[in-house]
Structure formats: structure tokens, C-alpha cells
Image 1: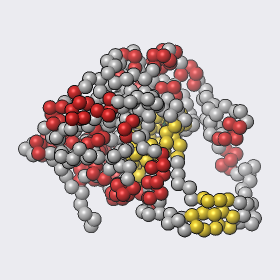
Image 2 (image 1 turned 135 degrees about the vertical axis):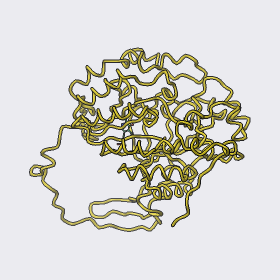
Image 3 (image 1 turned 180 degrees about the vertical axis):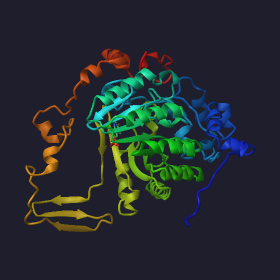
Length: 449
Ligand SMILES: *Cc1c(COP(=O)(O)O)cnc(C)c1O
């Protein structure tokens, strides 16, 4: 047996009875958000105090479970940096964008982002179990006043229903697993009623912030809506505890395929050795590393950014050096709405008609001889080529060179797009300018009135 993962509890929680500690409701209602409470658990630096005492900061909230994973005396602790703000968060908004991925521009109805041909991102809540300082959606996340209402859920479902290209629906937020269980189940069952929705995915950090929430009842409920996939969000090996292992065990036993999406963060996990330990521990708890993201250009998160080359270096240090299952894809999500772009180390040194010069992970150089004769399959007699269903976009670079439109709108797109709260927001672009920290008026950012 490999070495077991451990459990931790900060000193102030030693006397909390186990029934309470293991109860997700207790964890949620005892979250820490004020400087006085947090300073009882970890010794705060001047910079952290300054941030915690300033107004207009992106929401701070941490579960007792998650804060207990921090080494209270280490200001460089990699978990601490993810959830405790520092004064750096108040600095430098240059080149930062409130909605850096232009999600709002790709929203046909409030909370639904349709950027790729066959799948949509459905934002179902703005609430999380704890809040990551580098949150890519800090423009809406954390504010309970901006969360989505029933009318918006109905519009999201209606859009999915009317758009047969959508075969994959990704629930995100905020964190879908903090929704009231009844509402979450209603959404899942309504999605399952739509025949063209083949798979449902949930993006959640609840297993990491609040593993107690992954109860057998929740797993039974989720298991009714297969095929269901889930991506969790672990950034460092320190987050892999006995509790997280128990949660992923329950989820995988309920038949849910688990992946991990992490964000490359300066001073947190920008190290090939930390990343190798992370991905190896993830596969031990049966979580397949899926994406490693370049940190987005969100206001207040500039100090977390790394050069893109760092991500490439990390992938190069994983591929070949450890199990293929443990190697994620490094992604730059293009600012302005270009979508996810994979960026890879280059193993192909040159290519001619007959030969490719390649290198392996150790730097060994090899020549691959191409086949002399290649008889490609015939698209005219190929069943798959003849019967492929109409697609949105996906024509690639040839369409672009021919001057063709890349995004072919599905029928009814315009009518749906011009409904709801989005229109009033986009018609006055000036209103949608980046808001600096300290701007108290959040009414302009509302998803819907
Ligand atoms: C990330 C994302 C998806 C899912 O992309 P995959 O590469 O399929 O995981 C879908 N829609 C939006 C808007 C996204 O940002």
C-alpha cells in the first residue's frame, strides 16, 4: 500500500466534536471571512492584514477544513496564497480585464456561454464553498445578489432545448455543488429530458474545499443522471488529504469520471517537481489531470501570472517522465474570447516529404520514415463523412482563409440572444468597463435586473 493521506485540523478546532466537523453545513456556516477570525488560525503578515482590512475586496471565505491544511507559520504556504488575499491584490490593474474571456459577449441568455460548436457552459450560481483569489469570474462570483434566478434557468434550458448542436452541457458558476440539492437535481433532470444532451459535466471545487459535502446521498442523486463527468480543481499536492481521497472514492464508486483542472500560479505550483507530485497523487485518488491553465488576466490576480514558457516547461517535465494518465494538457484561454488554446512542447524538429525528425523526452533525436505509399480513405464512400451532422464553426483555418464566417449561428440564435438581461448590458459597452477594487457600486454588473 502506498503511504496514506493525512487529515488535519487547526488548533482552534481540536475540541469541535467529529459530528460537527464532518457535517458540511457546520463547515459552511463556520467559514472564516474576517481578519480577527483568520488571525486565530494563521499568523497573518502585514500585507495580508492590509488586504483583509480594505474595502471592496473580492469576497473572502474559507471553510475550517480547508484553512486547516495551511501551515500557520509559513507565509509562503501554497494553499494560503490561493485563499488569503495580500496587498498585491490591490495593485496594478494594467492589461487586466473584468471579463477577460469575453464570456458575456458569448452569452445568448444570461449565464449561458456558447463559444464552442457542440457544448455550452452553464453558470448556475455565483456562490462557492471558499473563494480563490485568482478567480476568473470574480466579476460575478461571490455576490449573492448576482446569482441566477428561476426565470434565467428557464431561459438557459430553453436555449439548450432549441439548439440541437449542444451535446455536452457543463455546469459551472460559482460552484454547482453549493446549490440547494433540490435545485441541482431539478436542473440535472431537466437537462436529461433533452434528447440531444448526451453528456453532463460539473465543474466543482467542493470536493477540495468541503469534501464533507460529498455525501452518499449526494452521490446517489448524481448517479441517476449518467453519463455524468466531473472536473475538480486541485492546484498543489498539499490539498490531497484523507478527506479528499474519501470524497473522490465515493464519487468514482457512483460511476462519475473525475478530472482535474488546475491553474498555474506563481509561487504556488510553478515548479515541475510540485506538479509531478500533484499529478501522481491525483491519479492515486483516481482523478485524471485534464487541463493546466495559464492564469487569466483578471484584475487583482496579476501577481499570480507566469510566463507561458513555464507551463510548457512543466509539461515537458511530465510527459515521458511519468504515467501518460498523469499528464494534463496545458491551455491558454485566449483573452478576448478566442477560447482554449493548447500549447505544447515541440517534439518535432523538422519535416520533409519522406522524413520527420523527432526528439523524445530525454532529448534523444530520431528519424521517422514516412510510408512510401499512402491510400487515404475515400470521403465519398465513408459513412462518417457523409452523415456528419451540421456543425457550428469548426471549419478551421481553410474557412478563415476563404473569408468564410467561422461561427454559423444556429436557428433562432438571434431572437434568443436578444432576450433577457444581456442586451441592456451590451448596448452600452461603456457601462461594462473594468471596475477597480474599491468600486462599491456593483449594480451595473448585474446579470439581470
Ligand atoms: C472550457 C469551456 C468549455 C469546455 O471546454 P472543453 O475543452 O470541452 O473542456 C465549454 N465552454 C466554454 C465557454 C468554456 O470556457
